[in-house]
Image (cartoon, rainbow, N blue to C red; front, side):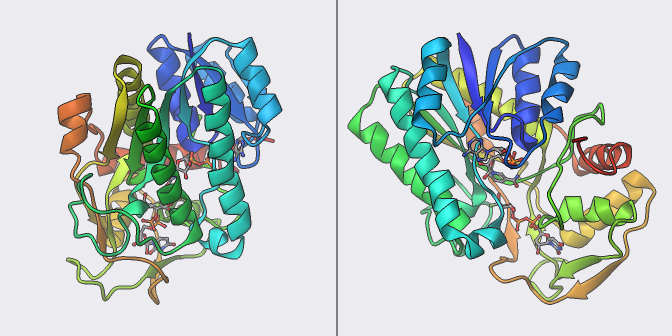
Length: 338
Ligand code: NAD
Ligand code: UFG
C-alpha cells in the first residue's frame, strides 16, 4: 500500500518523499508542476536510489484523480498541493480559493469514493491569526486570519473537522507548520522560489550569492528583543520527519488530530541574519524598511503535543538550517534545472 503525496515535487513535499522512501514507504506523487520543476523528481530519485510513480495531474481534475485511485493501492494521502504566497493571494483570491479549497474538496470526494479515508494536511501557523499570544498551543482559538491564503488554510481545517464529525471512520491529521527553512544535506534539494522571494531565508541566500543587493528588514520597532519580527524557524527535514509520524498516526488510529510542527524557539530577523553570516561566511547587507502589512511581532509554537503524542521533535538548530540553506543556494544558484 502506498502513500499518495499531492504537491510532492514542491519544497516540503520533495523532502518528505525522500524521508518516506528512505524509511521503506511506497510513495506515489501527484503534482501539476505549477510551482516546481520536473527535475525535482530526478533529484528525489537520485537521493533514494530508486524509481517511484509520478502523475502530472491537477488535484482539481476529478477524473484524473479517480483514475489514479483506481489504478493504485493507496492507503493514505499527504496533501501538500496548494498555492502559498500571501501577497499574491490578496491579488488573486479566486485562484487561491479555487486551487486550495476547491482542490481539497475534489481530492476528499475522490478519496471517499475510493474508500481512502486517511489524510495528513499541510496547515499553517497562520490559522492562529493576529491575537493569540506565543507560545501557540493547538487548543487556542483559530481564525481571524488577515489574507486569502490564510483563510484557505482555516477553511480547509473547518472542512476537515466537519468531515470527521459527519463520518468518524476518517483519520485526519492537521499539521500546523511554523517557518520551514533549510534544505537537504546533500545540497541537491531545497527551496526554489519564482521571482523575488517573499520569505526571509530565500531572500537572505539570494543576497549572499549576489542576486539581490540587500535585505529589507521589515520593521525594527516591534516589541521583541531587537525590534525585528520573531518566528519559529524549523528545518525542512525535521518537518518532513514529522509527516512520517503523522502518517503512522492516521494509519493506526481513527480520529481528528492537530499538531504544531515547530521548534518552540523564536529567532528575530537579525538573529537569523547573524546566524546565516556565521554559517556561510558571507555578509548579508541589510536596510531597515517599513513594517510589512499583516505581519505580527512574534510567532512561535509550543511543540509539546507533537512530542507527547507523535514522539516527534525538531532536532536541527538554526546554525544547521543556515548551513544547509546556503549549501543548496551556492550549489544551485539558479535553483532546479529546467
Ligand atoms: P510548494 O509550492 O513548493 O509546493 C506545492 C506543490 O504543489 C508544488 O510543487 C505545486 O506545483 C503543487 N501544486 C499546486 N497546486 C496544485 C494542484 N492544484 N494540483 C496539483 N499540484 C499542485 O510549497 P511548499 O512550501 O512545499 O508548501 C507545501 C504546503 O505546505 C502548501 O500547502 C503550503 O501552503 C503549506 N505551508 C507551507 C509553508 C511554507 O512556509 N513553505 C508554511 C505553512 C504551510
Ligand atoms: N522578513 C523581512 N524581510 C524579508 C522577508 C521577511 O524582514 O524580505 C521578515 C518578516 O517581516 C517576518 C520574518 O522575516 O518578521 C519572517 O517572514 P517570512 O515571510 O519568511 O514568513 P512569515 O512568518 O511571514 O510567513 C510564513 C509563510 C506563511 C505561513 C507562516 C506561518 O510565508 O505562509 O510562515 O507558517 F503562514
